[in-house]
Amino acid sequence: MIAPGTAVGRVLIPFPTVDEVSRHCLSDDEPESVHIEVHLPGRVDPARLRAAFRRALLTHPRVLMREVPGRRHRRSFAWELTGEPDRDPVSFAGRGPDALARVRARALSACPPLTLSPPMRLEVVEVDGGKVAPESSSVASGTATETGTVLLLTMHHTALDAPSGLRVLATTAEQYGGVDALPVTRRVRPGSSGPAPSGTGRAVRARPVRVAPDSRPEAVRARAVGNGMLQADLPVPRRVARTGGLPPWTVNDQLLVAASLMVGRWNVSQGRPAGPVRITMPVDDRPRGTEMPMGNGTRLVEVAMTSEDPRDKDLLLGERPDPAAVARLLRTTARRTRALKSAQGAPMGAGASLLTAPLLPVGIRGVLTRGARRAAGPWTSTALVTNIGRVPYALDFGDAGRATAVWFSAPARMPRGLSLAAASTGGRLHVTLRWSRALLGEAAGTDLVGLFEESLSTTSLTSTGAHAPGAGPGAGIRKVDATATDAEASSARDHARGPGGPYHRDTPRPDPTPGGARSTQDNHKRPS
Image 1 (cartoon, helix red, strand yellow):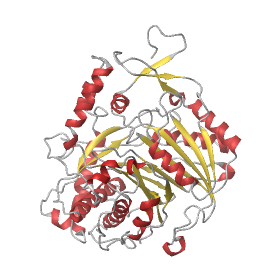
Image 2 (cartoon, rainbow, N blue to C red):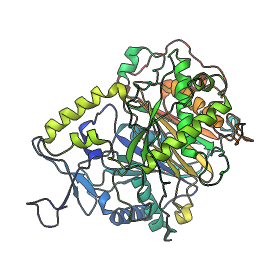
Image 3 (cartoon, rainbow, N blue to C red):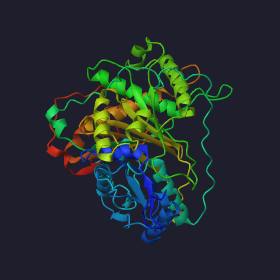
Image 4 (spheres, helix red, strand yellow):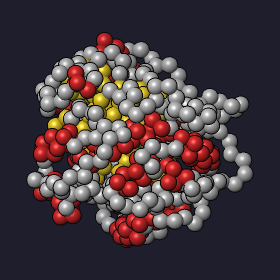
C-alpha cells in the first residue's frame, strides 16, 4: 500500500503480525536469524554470481525492503520497498580450514540489519577437500571430504523466512546458469472432514514439558549467549505403503515423532519426569514459483505429541522404543497434522492479532507483547520442528553444478531454546539441530543428535510395525557438522555417544569464555 502523505513512488507496507511480534521481542543475546546453506560441487564465478543475485532480488522486489524509522508513539511499523539494494549483499569469505566455520558462526550471532535493504547477506566459501575440519577423522567415520563451493544466505527472521530465501536462491541459480527452471507445482493439502482431533491446539491443554538443561553449572549457562548448531546428513526414513488413499503418515510426521522421542529420552536421562511434548510446526501453503509471496508466509500451529493410549509412554521412552507404540503415535500424529494443515487461521493465533492491532502506539504494544510472551513462557511449546521437505528447485548453477545438499536452520530462542530443521536433496535428509547456549552446550547437542538419529530410525516401520530393512540406528549416516567452540569441540567429540550407547554424564565442565564471545570451528565427526 502507499501511505498517505508519502512521496510519489515510495511504497510502504505495514508490518504483518508475525513481523511485528518478532520486532518487539528482538534480543542481542539470541539473534533472530535464519541461515540456508547450498553446497555446490564446483566453483562459481564471483562477477556472475553477484550479477545473478542482484537480478534475483529485482525479480522479487518485496525482498528489497528496509524498516522505516519512527518514534514509539507511531501506530505501526512499516517496511519501505527500495527498488534497489542499499549495499552489495554478496561477499566472498575465501577458503581455508576455518572459513566455513566463521561464516556459520556469524550466521548464528549477527543478523543483517533491518535498516538496510535487503535484510539478508550471501557469503560464499570455497571448500577444498580435507580442509574443512582438519581435526575430524573423515576416513574413520565414513565421511567423504568435500570440494566445491558453499553459498550461505543469512536473513533476519523479522523480515523473511527460509522458504522465501530458498526461492531467492533458486532464482539466482536460474539467472546464473541461464536455464529457466521447470514449473513448480503447488502443495496440495488433503481436506479435513469433521472436528479437529484432540491435541491440535484448540482445546484446553496441559503445560508442555521443557527440554532439560544440561549438566553445566547454572552460572555458566547464564553467561552463555547465542546459539549452537549441529548438522546431520541422514537417509530419508522409510515410509509404509499407501492403503487406498493417503499414506498412513508422512516424513514430516516421522520427524515430529522422532523429535518428541528425542526430547523425552533426553529428559529421562537427565532425571526429569516424562511429560507432554508439544511441537510448534510452521505450515506454508504458498506457491513455490516466481510468483511466491516473499516475507514470513507461514502460520504456526502446535501439535500435541501424546499417544492416545497412556500406557504407551513407558513403551516409547524405554531403551528400545516399542515398534507398535511408535506406529500408534505416528498414526495419531498424522491425523492431527492433517487437520492442522487443512484448517485456516491467523498466522500466530487470535491473541497475537489482537496485540498487534493498530489501536495503541507501537511502544505500548511492544510492552504488552513482551509481557504476554513472558507470561506465556511456561506454556510455550517444547521445540520447533520445521520441514521444507524435498527441495522443489533444481538449484542448477551451470558449470558450478547442481546443489548436492541444502541445510537451513531456524532461531532457537528461550524459553523454548531448541529448533530442528529438515530438507531433502538427492534422496538424503539434511537435518540441523540448533539450540540456545543458555540451555545446552556442545556435548549435550551431540548427544541430542545421536538420540534424534536413533529415534528417526525407529519410525522407519513396515505396516506390521517391524523395522524396515536397512533402517537400524545410524544406517546411512554420513556426517554431523557443528559450529562448536574451540574449548568445547574436543570435549563434545570425546563424549559423543553412539546410537544405542550410554549417556556420558560426567562432571560439570565450566565454560571457559564468559559472555559467549568465542571462536568457532567445524566438527565433522559424527556420533560414532
